[in-house]
Length: 162
Image 1 (cartoon, one colour):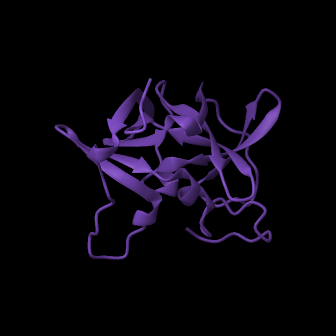
Image 2: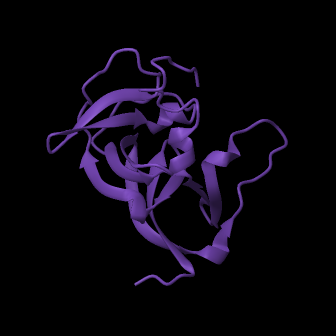
């Protein structure tokens, strides 16, 4: 059992990069199936994923982060996240390239998002963990999917470009 000094995460890959979200947000990990398309969504919104009869809005995390789109492979997964917002619990499907592991980080290992001196949306990042093989970027799911340029479905019927 992890203590208060640890953060348990699901690590996943997008291209050669490694990201993580707190395991407390992950409801399920699904094999990839193409979501049902909804018209007029922003580029990263790919449609609805059926989760036992519930239509879950689904986004392509690669596109949301400004990475090039990639064709799904046998390793592609959809993370079903329950993201707590101030007024509700947002259930969201997130398309990722592959799940790597469930692991724990000591909270002391987590460094703040770097200041790179230019405009960059580091508010999407909770922190980074240094590894021999590179960095693991811990994403802030609440911020990345609920800022003004996020999903946009139901936001006054207008699309806001990312």
